[in-house]
Amino acid sequence: MKFGIGSTRARTKVSTPSTRRGKVTAIATMTLLVSAAGGFAAGPAAYGTSLPSVKTEILRIGLNGVALPDPAKATVVGNWAAIQFSLAYAPIFHLGPNGTIAPALATSWHYVNTGATGRNKVFEFTLRSDARFSDGTYVTAQDVVGWLQHFTQAGAVWGGIFGTHPSFTALSATQVRIAMNTSNPDLPLEMSDEGLNAGFVVGPKALAHSTLLASGTDGAGPYMMVPSQTVPGDHYTYVPNPYYYDKSAVRFTQVDVKVINNPASMLEAMEAGQLDFALGDASTALSAESANFKVVESALGVRYFALNTIHDVVPALRDVRVRQAINYAIDRQAIAYALFGKFGIPISSFNPADVNFGMNNYYPFDPAKARSLLAAAGYKDGFTINGYVQGAYLGNLGQPLMEAVAQDLQAVGIKLNITPYPTDPEYATAVFSYKASVVDLATAGTYTPPIYSLFVAPKGAVNFYGTDPVIAKLYNEGLTANNPTPYWKEMWERFTTQAYTVPLLLSPLFFYSAKTINGVAATSIASTALPTEWSPAS
Image 1 (cartoon, rainbow, N blue to C red):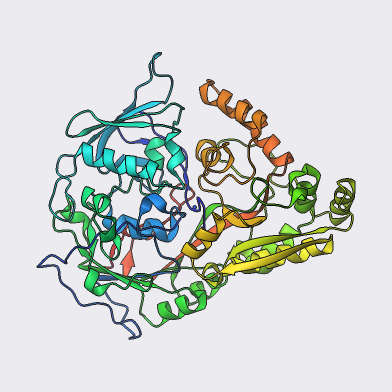
Image 2: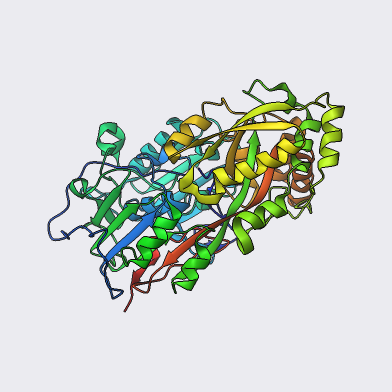
């Protein structure tokens, strides 16, 4: 599971598209039972049958994970979640590969920064008037308000982006206001199609009837799911939404999504001509290049292990010396190269793009220092902890990575018992049972505000370490300062020296495309290649 796992942040200013900064890693797809509209029928892709590499109007996508039915409950952002969501759910904003926030459902936007409201606490946007859900009903401000209320009330991992007790108001049929009690300068990014899933607006029918979310979609995006040709968890078929507001953007007569958990099998399907696009893996990237596929790589955040000091019963992890010892015990460089070759980049701190605090190599491999710290903390003979990890579907980023770390920890006396999970939904359930000492995650967001709100804030959805008053104070001072960098630099320095997490490597994301399609792209700003950008090869 990729928490945050996937995205890069860009910020915006006022009511026109603007360029700024970068974005972020989750599993999800909100669905509603709908029928395929007449005039858009197409036969399902024949998986297992080799197809020629020629121009195609049926787009065939291979994913190694599946989106949960409700984006509000997604645990992954970007990656396979955004790929599926973007097909059926028009986002509020679109994040282009160059980092530009562009109109989607929203056509204009701005923060209301006054002395009465405070800076970046009130945000307003205006919706386009011609957007319609796939049942033909128009998207209204009240529909968007209902979705945002659902997003914050459904136990969303990412619900904290609006702070506590936000209010959502329909000012008119097309105008929406979000009022927050804490500042957030990144809402346009976080509500984009490469953001934190809040922008993928689900229709009111699906929100009112959750049982309808089993095998269909209720969105205003370019496509809609066909229940009769869909088996959730295995394969999905989408056809064009006849009411989509931009007909020129509907470039395929059908989109088929096939779930293939094994990286080698995924590449084999590409080589057999069964897929036009696939999510790749570091273990197959070189082979994909050799097979003449286009290989696009982007950084999906920092892969790290969260140390559960809140819920777990291992008292050792509450001692900073023990947490530092764990960090010093790991040979990140050797592990990164062994598992990912030239694609492996070791790192020992979070890596926000807006603050260069110079601690990416703060914890060098030093087992002697690790043993000394353990002895000073009273754990000369070591101790045992348990870890939950993603299984084979994540390739080397999952179980092999944790097993490599476990070997290094064993050398200094710490035994890490590992439990892998076969699917992302099962892993997400296990992670949020809070019964593991260590869980395998990745940062969601490359800029300080989204990283902080999810992983560091006292009530952050993916906060496993608790509260550090010094960190909270420095962050809040930065939010209201003319220049937040000095405050946030000091904040990240403390977060790193306190060793609240175990950063390991930059988390790569790979996309493979055949010559049958054009437009597959990902950058450090927009880290997921989205099918709404692709077209059949001419």
